[in-house]
Image (cartoon, rainbow, N blue to C red; front, side, top):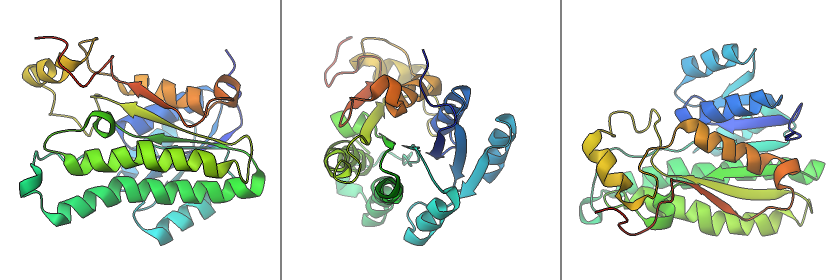
Length: 253
């Protein structure tokens, strides 16, 4: 099926990461013209660019207003933005021990980064009148995540308050522009490398109908579907959960 993404210009944030690079490859397979964002992973972004035939790369700290503005100036006209970049703190820390510094850093790296990315992209939409924004949240933002209340709070804000507000605001300037969210559950990626052994696998899949961890490509395909005006032209303000049927309760003993 034709996604209509050929020759569309797409920015993928966090393209040096596991899900981000999978998204970039999926968009490239549809013939899109890519801008690959990275923060610390320049070498990975350059390797991905070479793999994809010389896609543009652009570095930026997405928590910096000035750097995000410069990123969008460099990217130029965009049809799609896949806001994948985010940070999951590895250490399990309950709220009563959670330092304010980590709380602020996590919200900045996830929520503030998503806000600044969305703002930069939607400013361009105001000029051209169309576009699709796909935000990447997390099942932590739907069900919560003990030991990671900071991350869960940031992702919940993205999935609910931010996305649902943006989908209503963007139509004021572009009646057919769309904003949606993809929420991955546990996914094999550099962010979770070393975190998923057999014991963890059994525990985290106890709330999932399908007892397996997602691959980055599982998430990327849903991002592409939501980005496509051909496949999702009348879909906005929606969250697609890619988590093997995860629920907020135990399914398996």
